[in-house]
Image (cartoon, rainbow, N blue to C red):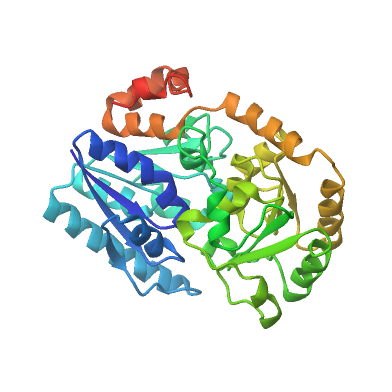
Length: 374
C-alpha cells in the first residue's frame, strides 16, 4: 500500500513517526508532505526522513492568505497523489479530506482539538470528511458522527513508555545539571487562526515568572516567537528531537503552549499553561480534572500563576506525586501507536470493527501492543 502522510505541525511529526516506521517495516511505501511550520522541517531533517514541502511561503494573519494557501495545497496534494498512485491519505489537514473525497481514496484525519476551538477547520472539512480519529475526551461537535474515539492522547503515541525512555546523558550536551532543579519555559507565537483573541505571556508577565522561578532553580526557555533581549540568556539551543529528554528531568514546565503542556503531562512533569484556552479544551481538561497532571490559568491572572508555582514547589515529594498520577493515566490508556498502525493497515475493516466494538482498542495495551501491530 502507498500511504501519504501530510504534516502541518511539529507535534504531528512526533505522532506519526513510529507508525511510519511500522508501516515501512510491514512493506508499505510512505510519502510525507509538509508545509513550513516552526521547526517541522528541522525535525524531519534531524531524523533523516525524506519529505516534500508543498507550501514553503505560508501566509499568516490574513484569512484570504490562509484560504489561498489551502487551495494551493489542495492542488499540489491532488497532483502528488495522482503522480505517485497513493492508496490512502492520512494527516491533520483539510487537504487530506478534500483530496481523499475527490479521488475517492480512503482518507483518515487525526486531531485532538475540540470543534469549538477550530470553527474554520470544521467548516472546511465537514462535507468531505470520511473518518477522524480523536481522543475520547475530544468534543467533536458536528464531526462526531464521523469520529472514532480512542482511549489515549496523540502525544502518547511518542511519549508512551513503549516508545520513549528519557536519557539523562542528553542534558550534559547542553550544559544542564541535574544537581540543581531547573524549569522549562515555552513561549508560543499564538498566531494560528484559532488563536484569535487568545493571549499568553506578555513581556511583563514573563518577567514576573522569571523573577519567581530564579529563586528556586535554573531556567531554560524555548520560544517560537522572538525573545526580548533580557530573556536571551535563558534561551535553550537544542536539537528539537531531544527536547523531551530535557523536559522529562525538569522540575516543572510553564508556558503558553498547549502542546508542550500535554507533553509534560505525558511524562509526569508538573505543567502550568498560561493562556486563554484554560478550561476550554477537552484533552487538557481531562488531564487537569481527572489526573491532576496540568493546570490552566487565564492570562488575566498572572498572580495566580506565580502562587501556583510556589505552592507546587512547596511539596517536598512533588516528583513522586506526579509520577503516581502519570501511572494512573497510563493504566487507563492504550498504546496509541500500536492502535493507529493497525487502524491504517487494516482500514476499512478496522473502521467497521471499531464502530461495532469500540473496546477492541484495549487489545493495544503495554503488554499486548506488539502482537497487534501487523
